[in-house]
Amino acid sequence: MENSRESIGKRLLDRLYGGLNMSWPAVILFAVGAAVLTAAFLIVPIFKNTSFERMGVTLEAWIFFAVIIMANCRKPIESALKTFVFFLISQPLIYLIQVPFSALGWGLFGFYRTWFIWTIFTFPAAFVGWYIRKKNWLSLLILLPVLFFLASTCIEGVQSALRHFPRLLLMAVFCLLQVLLCLFAFTGSVWQKLTGLVVPLAAAIILLLARPQVEINSAVFLPGDPILSENAVVSVEGGSPVDVTIEHGGEDSMIRVHATQFGTASFAVRDGESEYRYTVETYEDAEGHSQIRITPEE
Image: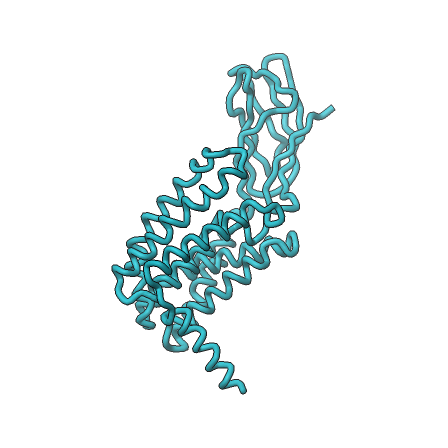
């Protein structure tokens, strides 16, 4: 029974990564289908701030699609061309579908610039990525950056789920499954599989421990919209987790808040004989977004 399950699993992997007919019509249909699905996740309110919405924001789902295309091409140049065309069709189509439903209208395409850069990058990446089909140490070396990204994203998803269950738990599971699928499909020996699992995971954990857990750096208006001169200065209570500076004065007076952890602090803005006292709070809302709240002190 166990051997039968292993055989079924192997056949499914072989089918997904090497047994599909990735013709040009199939690539185009794949791109259109992926774009329509992603646009739906971005438009329909029920998917807001969920793992599904991230399909239109981050790379984990698109890595999955790209690997399927690469694994089902016969030559590196075919892999490069078809992956590039897949992204060239799907990404702008996502924005085009959203235009009638967005307050930004055609302005949405201002966000396409980043995805266009990624689209150009897919050509050389997919040319090199085709060699994961060799199932050797070179395959693992090519996969390591992708495995590291997926491991890091998985850990971030787990952290988010622990703070706001079950937010991004599905994304974390999806990334973990991708790691395991890639290792089983594109590595040969047990040592290659263990290396591909341990090295990216260890690197992701080290990076997680080394970097600040929170990174807030934003300019905000002060309550009451006071007009500050160029001589205005800010003083923050000692030991505060929040740093506050003057961004610019005049009629559009703003301050800049920088924090590497969530917390509350009191600060004062002195401008000549005038003094304004505030409390600033940095926190994470129920949707997992970092927020800044400033309130005047009596």
